[in-house]
Image (cartoon, rainbow, N blue to C red; front, top):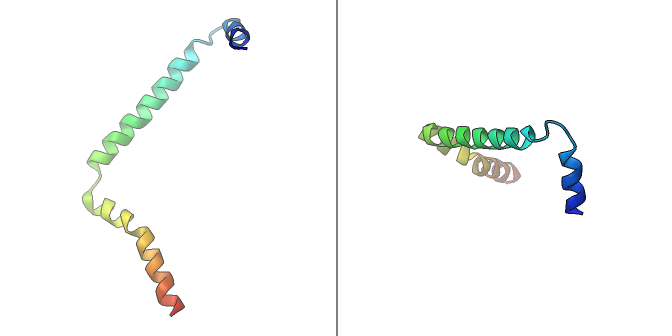
Length: 64
């Protein structure tokens, strides 16, 4: 099965560029994400991390 797929892929011209492009997209995405995580402001991270708790508190106060 793998020989069939490999043989089919070898017959396509220019196919070798797709794994390189996908690796670059993967690397660039996680590099940007890594940079964003370390440069994000502490206040913003605290505010976003409390969003689920705020929604739960709002539901509890309206039900009482």
